[in-house]
Image (cartoon, each protein chain N blue to C red):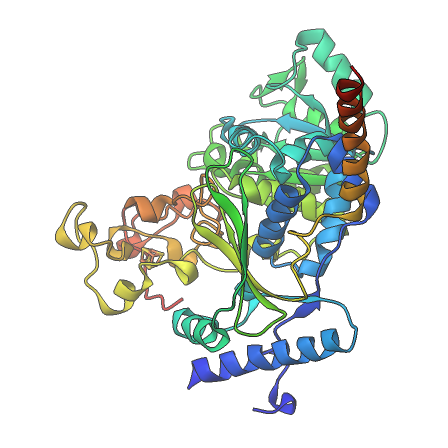
Length: 346
Length: 132
Ligand code: SF4
């Protein structure tokens, strides 16, 4: 093969190796962070983000920047799983991880669950943090469409009113979790509260701001962290039609699933704990939604890359997709254990 | 064979990067996660084609329990195979670096300056002990 045979599709990117400048090394020293561990974490993260290694200095600059972008994190109708996931990404590893640094490089100016303030003090903090413009508004949970539904009232104001005023000066809105991205569980049939996604809420309130959906119930910690870091380092990431970062939501769970061979050739699992199940067979017939679910669970995995639901023997529930609670499957039936209708080859 | 094509493609890239480095150019990196079609067979073939050299180095985690990064020289001087592990010891990503020695291992000039500053008091301490 000659060089001329290399098509653009084949192109492997050979990029200049990254070098940190003295400013970043000094900042790391001041933070008590090992440059080598920091570079190793950053390299792993960049690789997961499918970024060229030459972008590392930009990521490093964002992760060690002394100016801290303000983040206002508001929760609506949710279970706190998303925040739990994000906070665990910081708590799992001590020392110089990107996740730890991120906690230090963004200034979380408002978050009801994490902040010490409560009641009027908290409301005052929200008002002052949203008075300046340009902050990143992170939202988890869906919101009742009607301001007068009586559901979700906090500080004497409806969810819709709270969101409208918090979004007014935001530079970017990030919907974290499937409830915020698509309505999630609160919006599931019969949707008693009339819940809508953040995108739909923005449309009905006439709010036109950049929005990123980071779906998942909850999303993978690295995906939340990575999305924020990607935005800080290089602006708005490329998004799919559902406004999710393509980097993390570009491929199906099935496309990276290690059980894919038995999807093709069998034997597939027919009952939990049958012989195929014990051998790690494909869970398609047990209701796996991997073939239609765009997520990084089978590549990044969970708990520092330890495992993911399918590796633990459970079919994918499709939690990063809209209306996953109400998906109609084979035989017109709903349910996580009902196989997908139709046939899927990837 | 598909894997032959993928491997030859990577080797051509390595060759071009070596050429550039040999002429005084900058070091470069290939992220193997991002090489299209580098599935298990092609990966093994690439690894065996590049072979192994004399030098290897690793960086331990902050608590020293497991290594986070391992660099192994291939049979070609200036071509390094770098493996990154997660906390559980699983491989997260692998890269080929074309450089005299991977920068992550070498001390940074800023760290060298800092070492000199930190060593100063120790020298004075020894001088005081000798004087007493
Ligand atoms: S159907 Fe599910 S278990 Fe089977 S290969 Fe696809 S993702 Fe894996």
